[in-house]
Amino acid sequence: MTVHALEAARRLAPRLAARAAEHDRDGSFPAADFEDLREAGLFGLMVPRELGGLGATFAEYAAVATELARGNGATALVFNMHASVTGALGAVTEELAESLGVPDDALAARDRLLRAAAEGSWYAVAMSERGAGARLSQLSTVYEPVEGGWHVKGSKTFCSGAGHPDGYLVAARSATDQSVVSQFLVPAGEGITVEPTWDSLGMRATASHDLHLDVTIPSDRLLGGVEGLALVVAQLMPHWLVASYAAVYVGVARAAIDAAAEHLNARNLAGLPAVRARLGRADAAVAAAELVVAEAARRVDEAPGDTETNRWVWRAKLLAGTTAADVAASMLEAAGTSATRRGHPLERLYRDARCGSLHPATSDVCADWLGIAALGGDPDRDGSAPRW
Image (cartoon, rainbow, N blue to C red; front, side, top):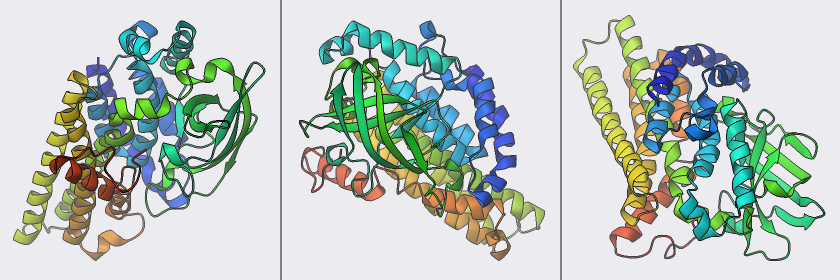
């Protein structure tokens, strides 16, 4: 693979970094970054080789996402959403498809979506809703069958990249049976309205606006061709819903160390023992988080959905989020007041890093999940709130 993809990500990172301050300041979407990703073939990163993609593993995705995030965490975060869609679709093996009852025409439809990604299309995720977050069981967006397809109606929030992708992965509940939650790949266009609501503390360039849907789509846009698979897939592939963020925030944390080192050397502050100690602790903390993310990714590739694999998935998300926030705060303190000015890379990275613990599953939810597991319970069922 992916020597090509990893080299491309490393080559692109300085370009992304050069544009990051402007997009952060304006809250504008980094469209040029996504043109670069398209030209580099990275939209096909998770697409199987036989469909024209690079056929990356989850571990290889994590390495690419980390490098992109060292350039611009916001760009890497939106790219993560596309990788989550294509990665989950590409991971449906013939054996899994048979066990889930996925019909052949649904597999053919899936292959068309993946081929389109390899050719340069990209997809966003429209899952979260106001009042429900990313909990699939609490959604208010509904769908119903109509002649020739499906009608989907509702509103989504935190839709990263809103207004820019070629399609949206939309989770919705059946209008006739609220226990049934399905996912659709809704094409961009008529019936979709973007409400510009994103003006946030960090990750300001993700264009994570609200999305309103009142749209009729073809029948083959029901992912898997079977209703009710969304919750099943969440249980089988929690890595895409939980740990794929982790690699992004490890990259943001590493970027904070890089920015702090540049700042300190430029101002002849590197001789201060307390400053050096902060960088040393930060380096060790990020290296530890990288190892946990790498171990989780290795296990995902070898035994996806396994009980122990899933524990590592939740550990990775928890450690990446908390480490990024702690490291960025320490690097800002090491650099001093001048690094808190708007436009300084550390000021932006501090705000971006603070968002890692807030992405679903939040750090509190991750810690609770892991605590229940450590006590011998079933963390997917014994928590006080539904995970999905």
